[in-house]
Image 1 (cartoon, one colour):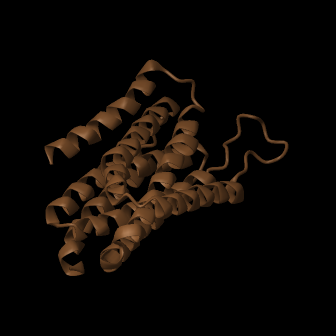
Image 2 (cartoon, helix red, strand yellow; image 1 turned 90 degrees about the vertical axis):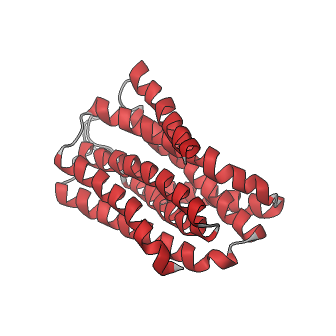
Image 3 (tube, rainbow, N blue to C red; image 1 turned 120 degrees about the vertical axis):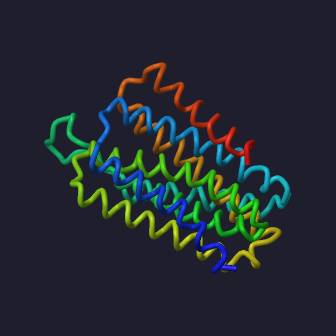
Length: 240
């Protein structure tokens, strides 16, 4: 099965690399960063609503759902606590903020996305392809938003590309792991994994992407792109 899935894994991997390279060589301005982050947040939110929640509700396993959700929230809050920080002491208020929390949270999300790609193919080739295309769109804008935030915080091009490479490796590792473990992810175990993913993705949207996006004064256009991202992924899922 892994040999059959591997060619499809190139789609989200290429999307991740493309997002990082675009931001590294043509870094967007602050307002465009905000627009990208709003759009990425809408895409992630749509992935939760359209891909994870229906499957989670279908499993109808309350206790594993609670456990997975609590573990997901706990991990995200723990990552935030370990990586939080701001400008160095004595630095001006306009100094770049610490982006470690965003990168760490996105890394967890990327690994979960890869896992979901692998699990999706366990449900059939068509289901796997739908999940792969939907999550590839999410990964493209998510990595683009993350790389843009790094550039805005003063990171070198080398660091941006290295971070992109690391996220791509995590994506592929998650997908391979999800494919190999797909047979064991059934019933309550699957519900727990899905609930963990829901918590991680919701945290990414509400506490990272939108928080970063609102560092720049909000505009109607930026706010509208959140809904545009949601609608784009929703229509893609309908088309597939």
